[in-house]
Image (cartoon, rainbow, N blue to C red; front, side, top):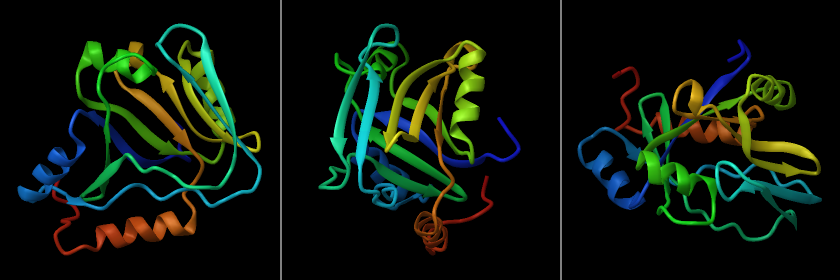
Length: 184
């Protein structure tokens, strides 16, 4: 981790997203705040690269940016922490399914904002970590996942610095009357 990183969120994979979000809110541990905001629209080409299994050949999918987005994640604001809750069932199709099959549901990644994704990704790769997911827009990485489990059983996700809209969204979430800052 570099000094210029900031925590974006903890990522949790579960079978039933709504059940967990409802449980957290019902016991006063977190407030459901919807899916994460999208990055600002940038006209051009996007590309997703991901592995179907943790070891193997990657798949890539190119697309024109813009258009509808199907939000699958939900988020809970727990004090200063943003918890991303993503519904995923074990089964073939994506690297995370293999991870869930062996580990089960739970926190599987920590996402950080970094001003230099390329530099930080290179450092992970040089230290034996595998890149298992990479999303780009016009050739610039907007998010990736690095398999660091051999060094701590959690993946690292890197993202660019939060923009003004995302910062405002997070501050609004933290100001909700049911969110208690500094409770942990």
